[in-house]
Length: 93
Image 1 (cartoon, helix red, strand yellow):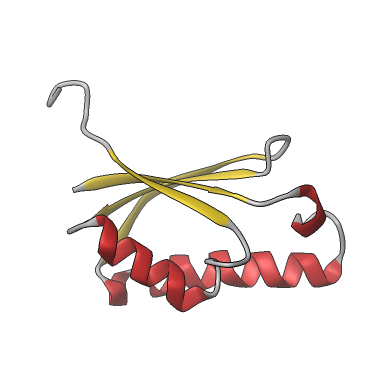
Image 2 (tube, one colour):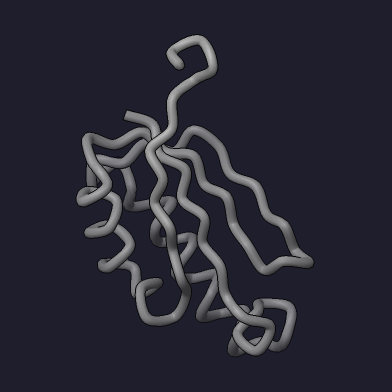
């Protein structure tokens, strides 16, 4: 099932702010992306709205619980805010 993850952070924790912020945010996102196949999550695509401090990550996973567990393992929960939204194609709707 497809899910859109809308992941936000605040300007103070933005990777553009400094080296430490870049390391923390980038490491979490990279770990989520790289470990996803092992956690039952398949990346379909991702985009960033820099001005809004948001990531949009389209993934395929059995459930939102699988995605939440993968986010927990990366340390993004507690550092960022994620909404996990089930989505279907226009043709399916």
